[in-house]
Length: 332
Image (cartoon, rainbow, N blue to C red; front, side, top):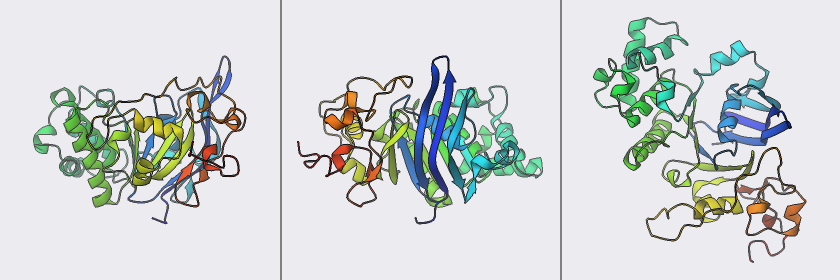
């Protein structure tokens, strides 16, 4: 996956408040290759959704992007006009939000809503758009798709509504799909089915997927690589198997320890103490140090960079990975 579809360099988003400027997304860098499924993981308030909205030029007021570059197929999206960006958003890049009830129009039929998503971006006849809508409902595995075209959102289950949203996002055949907490309100069976669908879409369509979630338990079967976010910054990046087996950031260890074992064995859960810090009053040094069981004196004063772990594809923002600073590393 040497070719990169999306490249994000030092992205920073700010909000002006009565108490000054806050930085909910700070110096974020990552990339995604065609056909790759990447998860952006972290607690609520860590900046995951705002990162996604920043990529699409949808930062809500009074927020704005204050720095960085976002390259999509080599084109810097942050330099485009609003009109030029709209031709890419929803066409080449699509997003699925977590609440289908808020995203679907309750008084319009499913078929009309999907067809409209096509007609906004393509100069085709309505009949062609309707046929493509039917084709996409089949693609996302919606039962009895012909019948669903004539139904309203309230007639569908939550899982079926989510599949409709995915169909709407994919009907323009984008190259990148961003899914923001798509399984939050689904039961375990529907959650597994939906995650399997993302994996199949990435494999069959060559689609790049950015999955945003707070739950590490959903990622093992479909995600190629995991990016962990905390208090506005990326703190760890690694291939999924590597991250699950040998995490190198205390926050990731905390996330893993606070969910049921992925192999089904029963173990006591260990919640992360404390809360995500107030963005108006971030700690000095490492922003995670007030909650960290491995905290060193340097963590109180010096902010660590996101660095490679022993020259591998694994990256972490933690002083314990620097042998010059912490010679004993994780052996404590």
